[in-house]
Amino acid sequence: MILPQPREGMHTVSKNNLRDPSTLDISDNDIMEAMKEIGGYVDITPGDARQIYRLAYHHALERLLRSAKAKDVMTRNVVSVKKGTPLKDVAEVMARHGISGVPVIEEDGTVAGVISEKDFLFHLGFESARSFMDVVARCLSSAGCISICLREQTAGDIMKSPAVTVQEETTVAEIAAIFTKKKINRVPVVNPTGKLMGIVSRADIVRSSFPAISFQGTE
Amino acid sequence: MNYFHKMKGTTKSPPRVSFSEMVWSWIGAFLGVAAVGFVHFRMVRDTDLVMIIGSFGASAILVYGAIKSPLAQPRNLLGGHVLSALIGVLSFKFFDNYIWLAAAVAVATALVVMHATRTLHPPGGATALIAVIGSQDIHNLGYFYAVAPAGAGALIMLLVALVVNNIPRKRQYPEFWL
Image (cartoon, rainbow over all chains, first blue to last red; front, side):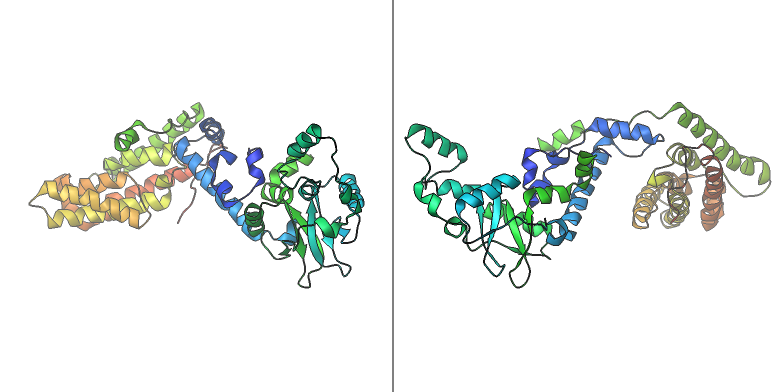
């Protein structure tokens, strides 16, 4: 079966995107070819066949999102930092693992907050910075860049707190909704005592929604 | 504006079937109609029985030419003909003074009953109509019209369909029974 390729817009797997037929488009010609392969007279127009395909695809996707839980899609070996970790080390950890955000944990293992690239940007001295390019532009137009005080600070100083967290039993559909509503890209998964169990990113959700594509990609 | 726009259509005609599909459709239709025709003209000739009616020509198109269609499945073939026959006979008994009315009621009601029972089979409409506008021989059959020709004829065509439609490797019949 030909599955649609992931596109930019699909990173937010919200209810709205699911309903958008353009994300899973097949053409009348695809249907015509399929009908020819079946051989006998198929008693349906290509248009109706495509509509059935689309609707069925939505149902399959929603079933998948409803049934899959955080524990099924989360990354278990989470890279995390302590509240007292100096920001220099936090940045190094993020760079080394190629990640754009890490959970910050208390000494007892509970999640205190989350630090993302954005938090660094906002604390580089440009409170109004909206994006990376915004910071670049300001750096190029002024003498200095890095705020000195950032060097002295620790993860606990700039993290977003309290962290938005989910439980292991939270469904992927709920997580997708949280991503969209809170405009965040990852959410720590905690057990009932607040201890960090894993993390779910937008990429995890895309992978769980389109297993066939991920599979093709790793072949 | 939207109303007229709808008349433009939205998609295209399904592709032409393969040559072998045409050949096997012909063989099926030939044998199916030959079977009911043979029973009608050779076996029950000297009785009051009727075995062939016009609607079987339409059934042949479906059960030998569009064998994947839900309309062509055994449930629909048998159910559609028998139920429509009953509706047709009933309708004729009720409105025999107004044949045009009996005909219209027969076909429209047969359609709804077939829908309600998930036995939609277009030739059933003809079976219902023939019960009203058919010959004196047909009218003489009374409710037996639902047994033969409607039920028995459909059954013969079904048997032929089961035999013929499963011979080619790529063909399979039926899609479902009930």
